[in-house]
Image (cartoon, rainbow over all chains, first blue to last red; front, side, top):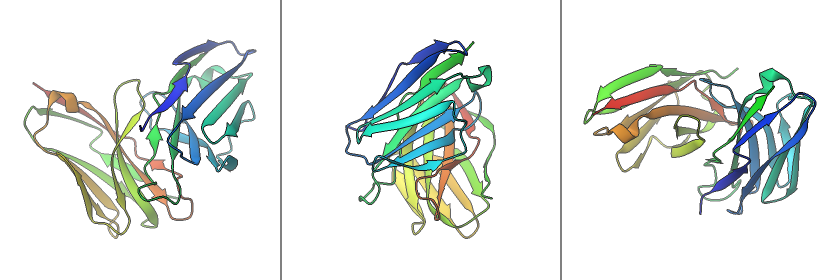
Length: 115
Length: 113
């Protein structure tokens, strides 16, 4: 099974709302990623968790707050977002140190619209 | 700073023709290079991964080559089908930051029946 699942598929929120995006994988991967993708642009890395610890934060604004409660789950908490944060948010995972572990497997994404 | 470029930005071919997609990168200090496919509004699907020590990888109708010294990779798709229509992205992983993918802007491919 090479599946990464993301919920919800679509999310519409106001600038004062608090919401969370969820990502889950059961492949035993110990690295998980959040990417942001604007229309007609490539994905941009936001955060990397390695063995449940935040290892990379690409200078993302604090209104985005990642959380990795266990090795299978990755959350992205959203608060006081701006309309320009509207995008497709993608989660990915892979297996550092394992044979053929470099390939990143992506979820289907959450389409976020901020009004 | 690493820059990844994909040319052309868009490509339209009749069914049955071979596809050639190009990816170039400015810094040869890479750990690996990956090719992905993305359908509109969907996530990315990994196609092939080439380690920096490898010259090519093959999977079915797909073949990817890597020339690290010249900073180039090419994805060949043989005998294209309408189902191959998608955006194809290449991404490099730098040696100083494993897993941190730097993407090209992609090539949008349309295969016409």
